[in-house]
Image (cartoon, rainbow, N blue to C red; front, side):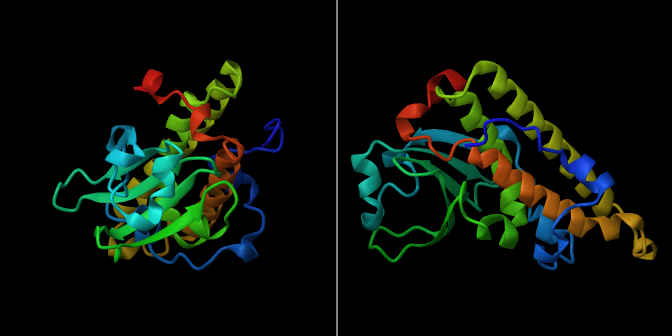
Length: 220
């Protein structure tokens, strides 16, 4: 866990100062890589026990039932699209399940990412990284291990970063064809990398948390 945030810079600050480690960033060439089909709101993340989640009937994941895991599921406002992703809080570091489909005959398809330790979640899926920031905020607020003042500081930082990226996305998608040389286009890659960097930073606060270290009931 990070003990302090002295080396932390907001996405906006990183953009102004120059984002470090640019060589590690994959080529995110369109805004679709950043925003996907929609940008979630905090209310789109639904809290529930693992048994009641979309993953609850998957036989291969029954171990989560035994440890009373808690989940936050992200749903698209269009009910026909259904669940987009699930974050599981158990005995291990918080884990993101990117769900293709769920089938109780154990042919379900999903990808898993340990949010506080993996590099691939943000590097390959910056759109999921952005939406998961709100789930991270919910979990930070529900943590029973982090001091109150620290939780307030972290959630404020998350809110600031999410708002900045969302505003950036709205500006880019409003560009016309003749604006293809706009400075905003050149900023897509640095903004994406800063988002990935900060997402890893925020999730690391929860790296040592177990399911019992959250009080989600008081966070509704």
